[in-house]
Amino acid sequence: MLPQPHELSEREKEDAMGAYLMMFASLATSLPLPIINLIAAVIYYYINRKKGRFIHFNCLQSLLSQLPTTLVNWGLLYWGLQIFFFDNYELSDYFYAYLGFSIIANLVYFIFSLVAAVRARKGIFMYFIFFGPYAYQKVYAKRNRLSYDNEDFNPEVEQSVNTPPFQ
Amino acid sequence: MNKKILLDGLKSLGIFGGIFILFYVGLNLLSEDKKNKWFYSDEKISLISYEQEIALGELIDEYIIASQYKNPLTNKTIDSMMWAVGKRLQGQIPTSEYDYNITVLDNPQINAFTIPGGNIYVFSGLISFCDSPEQLAAVLAHEMGHVEKRHTVDRLAREFGLSVLFSIMTGGDTVLLSDLYQTLISSGFSRSQEKEADQFALNLLEDASISPKSIASFFRKLNRENLAYDEKIELVMTHPHNNSRIKASLNHEVDDTFDEIPFELNWEEIKAAL
Image 1 (cartoon, rainbow over the protein chains, first blue to last red):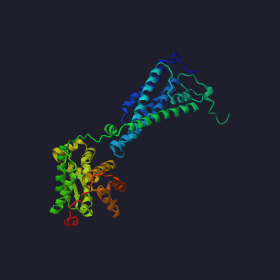
Image 2: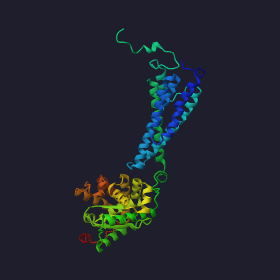
Image 3: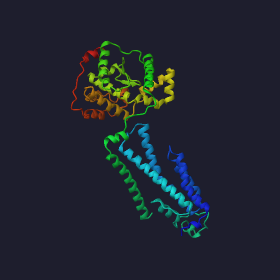
Image 4: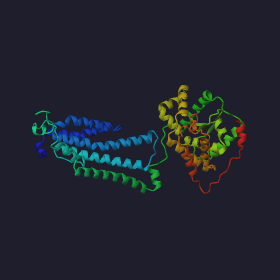
């Protein structure tokens, strides 16, 4: 059963919201090199994922959803540098189309992340296309063997995979 | 991962692929004029004014003549030939900010180079190599392309930074001038700059009633004599694709009104005067 907003603690809601908001701050600092935001997201994910399933879900969704935009931004940076700095390529319709596509992709990502942050603060689940269901499956599936700080130890799940060689 | 998630992934890929295609199609629906004006404007913003560039060029020119090539070739036959070729070309660039100064250096290299401010240097080896004044004009038109498109000054600004260039302009430091000179003759122009200079040369030659195919005949001769890949030839050192340049020159469509006017120069006599 998924937790309802009144069942989640304030701390859980804030940490879940942080997964999205942290990305904005790191994105601003990493504009010349769009990799710092990804590193920050990975660090945030590993620090917070065990705090609770709701936090884990939102951290994972935030981390996964920024992978494509980071790749798109890297592509744009590389292409732009080759055109304007190294003069290896020329401006073309393809570049402008890619630029427009990148702007839209970043805008969509920005809006979705902002809405997700607000909803996470309220304790409401928001599923991004593709990444939402995937993160849900990873976090709430039975095979997820992470033990969370706010959950009791579950021996059934814990013992179902690894067993000693001789019993 | 279940089917629904995969389907979601495919859907989002489709949506974003569609956005890219929409932008591309949208761009192609624009008229060429609007597209060129909005996206491919040729106007470049340079932080170095023409006056500053010309002043810098004078300093480098003084350095070249004083320290590098102390023997510019001055004889009446060569001077009048260079004047005739240079004038024909420059006459077709009425909006030019430069007063071209073409200097012939007594050196067997098949080479020509340009420095900021409209100063072009031609080695006597290049003149000997050319079969006709039209071939020489083709090389000069290419160098003028680098000048008009401000490639040399852009390259120096990029390599040294504006503050160093401004300090040279005010101080004339010979060590720095030597560095500038070395950069100008060693590091080549980018491929897109070469292409831009080539395109400029093709148009200029046509405007000057010189066959744009002269570029092709020059590079064909280089290829024929197996000199195209000789690293000593700085003129072609940065141009690894001579064949594509020959093709571009041959494919350049001249206007219906184009009428070739050959130079009235005795080329053999000129070569003998070198």
